[in-house]
Image 1 (spheres, helix red, strand yellow):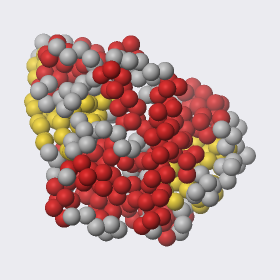
Image 2 (cartoon, helix red, strand yellow; image 1 turned 45 degrees about the vertical axis):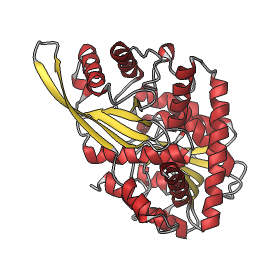
Image 3 (cartoon, rainbow, N blue to C red; image 1 turned 180 degrees about the vertical axis):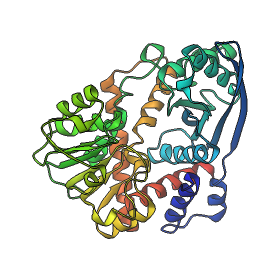
Image 4 (cartoon, rainbow, N blue to C red; image 1 turned 180 degrees about the horizontal axis):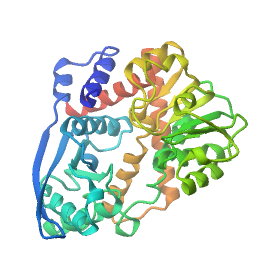
Length: 406
């Protein structure tokens, strides 16, 4: 299993090979500002006490408060959290929002806890880290296995400890607790704005044949958005199988089938293929919206897509990137295409600080402006340096962080 932090550093080295950065800046950037670790002890429903490992990695705040999710997972470790905190610092710089990068979590399987135990654990996390987080210091958000309800508990506990009841200490809260409109569909919506901005530049037709890997939140909203705009979604997959129809799928039927049967294998009216076959289908646009490391050295030479747009985190390995670039297949990188979630999170923080509530239309108008502007910036940088969009995105982020650190 590759170390995610090593992968992140590898991406920086690849970008630095295209455009020179001062070695002392790069060295400084490879080390987090703060690694915070705590032990949390709570009383379980049966009266026993149990202790959990908890942490927060604050990577870089040159451009604004640390920003990034908290995950509750039994396998979460420091290498993973460091990598995610580092990517967040780059992602916020790519979309040019006034935030840095951080990440945190608790080593726990939340499915083994009752609602009451989960609430006590979340409040214990807040008590342990209260002095290190805050609207102008570090603004956490949901991540794997953490929910809007957990964010509401954290905001409430933080308010009790500090007297700050603005809610701006965390984002991803329920709407009634100060959450933002549009958060649920932000990843796909922002990815669509990036696609629209780059479609002509990347030589895509007006009506694209689209293949989507993943039918979770990002995948299903992407399927709806692209098909509503007149594109033809020809294949969608879940973790077990994919449905394929070269003439175009009925997206709502596929989603309804997935929700009812819990598996696409049972969907009628379409050919069932494997995930491996899905990735190699002849199409205009391939959208990986599921897991990391899906497009690799092994299958990159077989891809028949004209463009890959990454709604998942890290679906393409560095070796695959090189193969696709040499074949003239553009990859719109995750660091741009799925930076919409953190952008809308920043809108939530802004609304809380100003005591405002924006409509979904206002949120999407602001999101579109940012995503289109930065997609065009990154495309221009890729042309200027004759490199791929991923390295161009990293270079844009590094230039912005370097400028702020000066």
